[in-house]
Structures are given as structure tokens and as C-alpha cells.
Image (cartoon, rainbow, N blue to C red; front, side):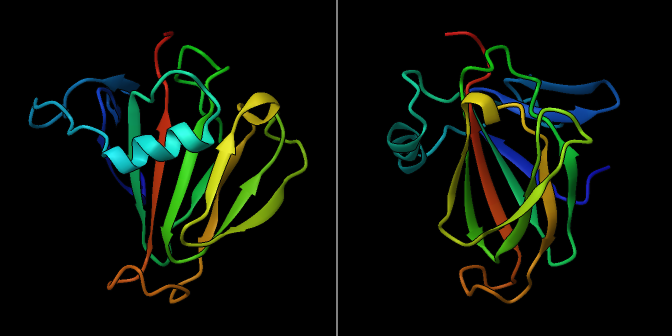
Length: 157
């Protein structure tokens, strides 16, 4: 189980359950398709991703004040030349990014509400995670916390 609450939008959603990690076109409990990616997010992809094809998935993560996410790589996609675009809303977080191996040196970056981060090129497979959320650093979300919208291309174009 994850401490981060998750949902998806787009043609494919990222799912983690007893069968493992994967992308699929429907919600695992309802069997219904994920809602489409909102136009404003598609426009952000066009402006920031420097990739000619649209994203197929947008993972929506909610981090409460005490939530963390350990170092990991985004390796479930078919084409690592397609970037991952992350948009932050709400409380500031300490985002940790390293190299291509788990034991490579890391550095911490503050991601504030409105920040965009692109993991592309050599950084596409960098280990990354969230050390912590700095509660009360934003008034965007009335209940505090952080929403991270992570868009990516899943299949080869």
C-alpha cells in the first residue's frame, strides 16, 4: 500500500495492485474508462515537454502533510525518450533526485505550488522521490497537502 492517494486521467491509468504495476485503460474497481486529461494540462505538456506526441496518462497524487514517496524510477513506459512532466499544486515539498543507480548521490529541491519539473533526456530515468511535504506553505488547498500531476507518454507513438 502507498501513503499517497492516487487517481488518473487520460487514455491510460497507472495501477498498482496484487497483480503488480501497470497501465490500463479502465479503473480497476469500476471498470470505467479514466476521464480525459483536461485541456489546460495538455497545453502545459505542449509548452514544456518538448515532445511531439501527447501524453496518454496523467497520474494524480495527493500527498498529505506527513506523506513521503521513496526513491524510484519511472520505468513502466515503452519509450524512455518521452519525458515525464510533473506539475505541483499546494504545499511545498522536498523533492529528491539522484542518478541512474539507486546509490548515486542525490540532491533535494523545493517544489512549490505552480512549479513544473521535466524529467527528460539523461534525467528521464533518474531515481527520484518526495522526502516530505512542508505543511501550511500554501493556501491553494483548503485542507493542506500537495497535489502532483504527472503526465507521460506510455506507448510508442
